Image 1: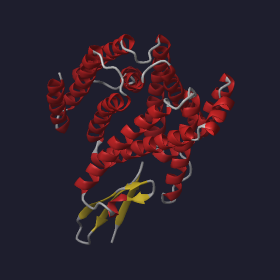
Image 2: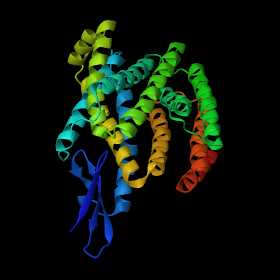
Image 3: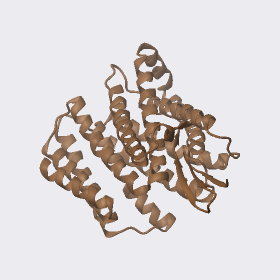
Image 4: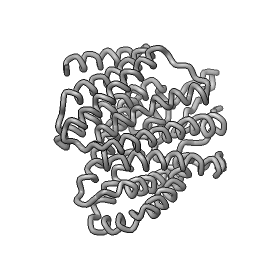
Length: 356
């Protein structure tokens, strides 16, 4: 019996010859080193399980992380970034250790140092913005990362985008403005300094995403757990240094000693975030980028709704209109793709109309 094994990201497609010249595809899903296909042999069940895990873990990540901000005396958002990156390092190390023996490191430490600065900078600055902005506004603003990503992709990678995607970006931009006005009008935390921080953070995340795609995935074909492991190790060091320079590292450690629930919740949120990232990569590999984008769109909308539901924030008309435009931007972008994305966009349109 002949077989060909192709390993990338997380999991492997194995094509097995049955002796009659017929090649049968045996989809084997692996996450955190566990063979998920043994529990769920049906591809439909695998798809639903992965999509549900992405949405649930993303909502858990946001809800738990926001809950940390309500712990008495907690204002150490840089410490939150440091512990998050440390947890990512542990998770990636466990996954890499449980994976089959792999080839030596693909990326150079210079590449990972560059990526880690961008990744840490994006996380550090967007977390810092939580001192001045509400969590839902942060989620909406992080979605605007699409704008610099598109701009950099056109210049840096030579990509082309459709009219629907440009309309989607326009709706997203207007939605963000209205959502911001809602926070400014209501009693939610709002300070213009937070806007500057999250814009800078989103720009760094966009640079990281483009560099990661072009250099590490396209040119060097690095496994995702390798990229996460080395970028998180170095990012954790940079984040700790930034905390030390700001004079927040020791006070943050003392606060964590007084409130041990803080580092515990940050670590739990990070595990949920890492789980979401891993499942997204498996979805892309086995079921395509279109389905993965649909799932990611769902999690954004549900994360915002969950935040308002759990923490009782004041809701204004600006929030409602901005949220509808945000949902509309997701729908337009998905509609322009066609196929199952178009049906998803239609469902979003119905939901938005009913909500209005």
